[in-house]
Structures are given as structure tokens and as C-alpha cells.
Length: 146
Figure (cartoon, rainbow, N blue to C red):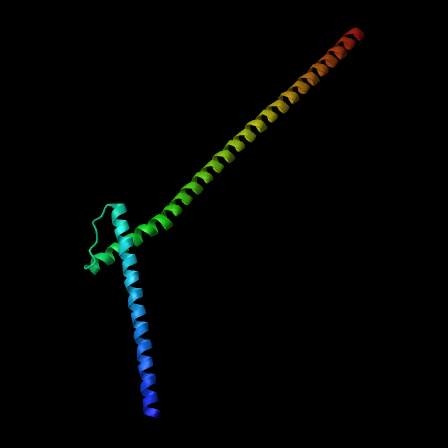
């Protein structure tokens, strides 16, 4: 074989491989388009839309965008809203519980202060009575000596 024949043979093999890759790429694109079309059909069926025609690429793309938007909202936004709402409720509950506990502590403190004051008043009254009785005793003693 001459060099020219070898080069021609390599060129033919290269062209065959290149064509096989192009065919695979076209098949992949066709499968992807079918998958997108199926997803759009499913979305239109689930959400009450009309069936999308294969010929209208702009409608197909807009439906795909709608489906993507719906998926993002359902998967990303709703859980965030639920988490935020749950966290707010948890914080409200904790705040209410802290406030309730603080009120209980304040009431208990006031009861303790009032109890101590009543004890102090009782002891002060006892001292006054004891001092008064001492004064009476002293007064009686003085009157005896006069």
C-alpha cells in the first residue's frame, strides 16, 4: 500500500468515527427533547394545562421554564417558609415561657419579701410590747419609791 492509500484509509475511518459521534449526539438530543416533552406533558396533566405540541419550541421552552419554576418553588421556597414559620412559633413559645417563669419568680419574690416583712413586723411588735412592759415595770417601781 502506498502512503496515499493509507492516508485515505485513515481519513475514511476518521470520518466514520466522527459521523458515529454525531449520530450519538443527535440521539442524545432527541432523548433529552423527549424527556423534556414528557416532563411538560406530565406538568400540564398535573396542573391542568393543555398538551404541548412538539412543533412549537417556544411553547415547549416556556412550559419547561414553568415546570422548573414550580419545582423550585415546591422544593426550595415552601420548606423555607415552613422552617421560618416553625422557628418563629418556637421563639414565641420560648418567649412566653420565659415571661411566665419571670412572673412566677417575681410573685414568689414578692411573697417572700412580704413574709419577711410580716416576720419583722411581728418581732418589732414583740419588742415594742416587751419594751412597753419594761417601761411599765420601771414606772411602777418608781411610783412605789415615791
